[in-house]
Length: 317
Ligand SMILES: C[S@@+](CC[C@H](N)C(=O)[O-])C[C@H]1O[C@@H](n2cnc3c(N)ncnc32)[C@H](O)[C@@H]1O
Image 1: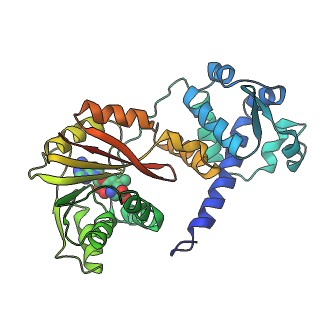
Image 2: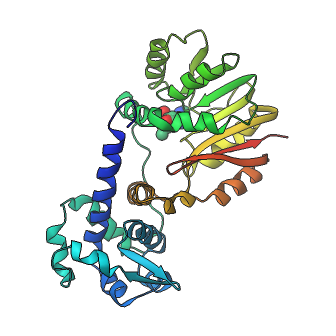
Image 3: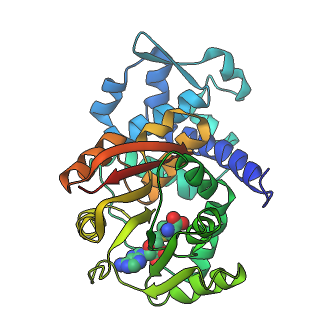
């Protein structure tokens, strides 16, 4: 349990509904029948959305519905009796909790040829960001700070797209000598200010509005935090600006979801699947290393993980 007390319960709920929604979507395809006989990832990928098949397989593996033996995937007989009338796959769905929206989405994307999902930029508002803040605050920020313990964080730090401001707040608490700057869109800044005031850190954290897509980052910093802001087409625009806004030997600190984490547990596998059907692909750590190299960063290292997230640091020359 975290200080908010709901996280474990939320996770359990997501694991169970995620597993059931995946199974429910599969009952509309012939995938369960193929798994009953034994099949391979490659065979399934020929017929269904390749990216999503990988996510589905991880969900089924971690949910112990299937096992992999000599590259072949099989339904786990010993778990089957848990489902009434499992010998009639077509009736499973009536026994599963109903969340048609999610299982329909999984089914739709499974049969779609289009691997990439273009999700529109969300409406960033206080309510949405406060929610993100509560989730992030529970463990993610603590894990990020812990993972940075062997990295020198000195001078100044810009929290780009700070939103709720909780990352800046925790950095200010942990690094009292660090000069912290937090910026976000004009309409979001009041929320950042409100939270910073709550912790009496107005003197420590300088808050200003900046649209990082439309504008340049005017000042130079020793560290720039990019936490959950480098989605899709934003990456190329933002990474170049960040590089130029860092002093020599400056650090970019990235917090992002990565695909490598899906095989860790059922929660991560379901989270990645939900993320994909709602928002689009998650990239691998190698992708992030390559893109950071492309924009000139060196000494790129992965400092730690939290759930789907990886914390990646790169330095300017
Ligand atoms: C997913 S939230 C991340 C918030 C926080 N950094 C975290 O990790 O929890 C994305 C943030 O980026 C901000 N953002 C999106 N587009 C932006 C832009 N063009 N300029 C500045 N901030 C932007 C949003 O307002 C939001 O606060």
